[in-house]
Each structure stands twice: as structure tokens, then as C-alpha cells.
Image (cartoon, rainbow, N blue to C red; front, side):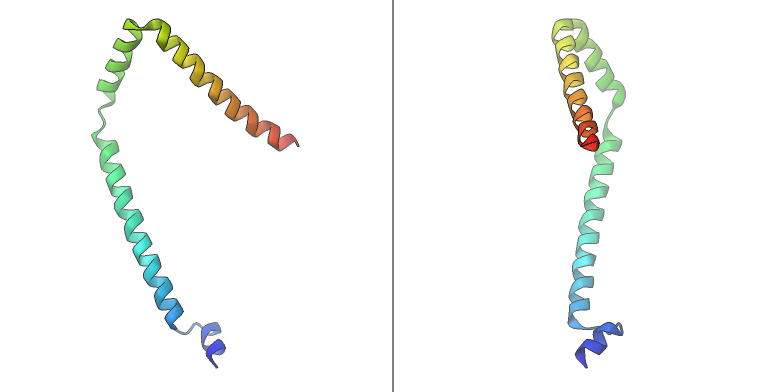
Length: 87
């Protein structure tokens, strides 16, 4: 009889616990989303761009090496995913 209740969509203790967990997870994710959204809205892209430009002008060699390194890593990541698809 208990199994019939569950299969018929009865509100058992398992469903209450599941909906409670789901509600807590939804609230947690929603609050973290709002926190991250506020942080992103507070970022001043113009100031960051100015800082990067001044760093590149004062350290062109380091900036070039950093950009080459980042490009190399991105290339490895993209190439690695292509090779896995071919196998």
C-alpha cells in the first residue's frame, strides 16, 4: 500500500525532505548568483583597461611572454579536446 501511494504521487516523508532540500539549494544558489551579479556590476572595465595598458607600456617583454603563455595553454586545451574526439 505504501508503494502504491508513492507511485500515485502521494506526499510522503521522502517528498517533503526532497522538496525541503530543493528549496534550500534553490535559495543558496539564488543568493550566490545575486552576490556574483553585484560583484560583476561593480567592476569598472575602463579602469582595468587603463591598468593593463599602463602595465604593457612599462613592461612590454613580460606582457608579451604572458600573452604567449596564455595562448599556448589555450591552444593545448583546445587541441586536447579535438584529439579526444578523433579517438
